[in-house]
Image (cartoon, rainbow, N blue to C red; front, side, top):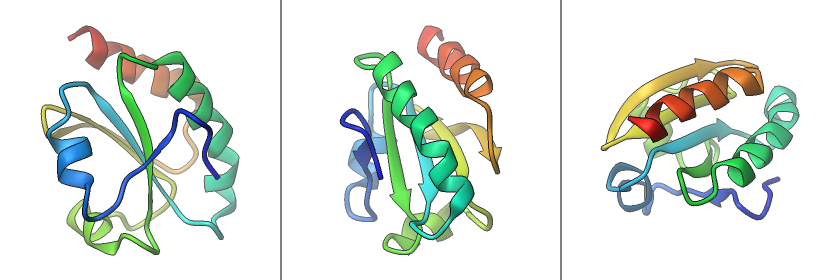
Length: 111
């Protein structure tokens, strides 16, 4: 469900991989059964390629990693959170277009 440049974040590695990252991190909260999540997947894959080396792009399966999902109050999927310096800087709920995600990442990569 994820391209080569897309990481799989878990409850156990979320702090290390996302919160302590020295780069902005886009996290797509999703589930296998979620059709809008599946529709968003190619966009996430393209962002991983576009921002390789500048930002981390990854996914959290809300069914398998409920601690992280609960901590960030994920009540609808897909939800995309973009972190920088351990803090949520941008939040997108539902289907989000590639342009909005690209713009948000560009703002944080350059900041």
